[in-house]
Amino acid sequence: MKESLRCIIVDDEEGAHLVITHYIQKLKTLKLEGQFFNALDAMDFIYKNAVDLVFLDINMPGLSGMEMLEAMTNPPLVVLTTAYAEFALQSYKYQVVDYLVKPIEFPRFVAAVDNVLSRRPVSKSMSDGDASKQPEHIVLKVDGNRVRISFNEILYTQSWGNYVKVFTTDTVHLSLTTTAELEQKLDRDRFIRIHKSYIVALQHITKIVGGELLLINGAVLPVGNTFRRELLERFK
Image: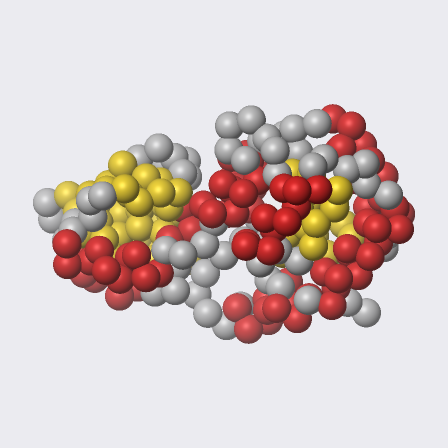
């Protein structure tokens, strides 16, 4: 028996949360893992936890649902929700699985979930077995100790003399290594060298403007001319 899809709700309206939560509780194929009223909190949760499906509102203050999708390199499966049918048409641009127009009716909700289940072979949950064979973390020497750092937590790294600073979602580690050595240990599908002194996690980039890029935590980093072309090719 397949495990239930781990899902979250991202919507700024309390009423939408109540309706979708009620529908989720009716289906054994879904397991609600979290509820968020803004995109940034939801993205932080996704980076730190296994999520198979996101019920994502398009219109939200701050970061919209569309902007959230643009900011994520490899998001979970997504079902967009909106009160405006014309906005739902934009969903195809982002290759989401389905969209629901508010007020959401239960039969239509079930149809969307069935659509998601038909796509499940390409979702994160179904690839866990293969993914587990690959390292999901890096071990660094920090202050004489060995520290394990999850790839999902790393925002970027910066050369610092004979050391490298590793910036994560909640702290900064200083390790006696080089950027070149660190680059060999990181997952190349997730990380990219953008400068002789910097490596960044693709999933945490929100915007590239001129010779700089912006990360989800607000950090602005320089992009070297040598690395710019590959960065633009991979940030799509």
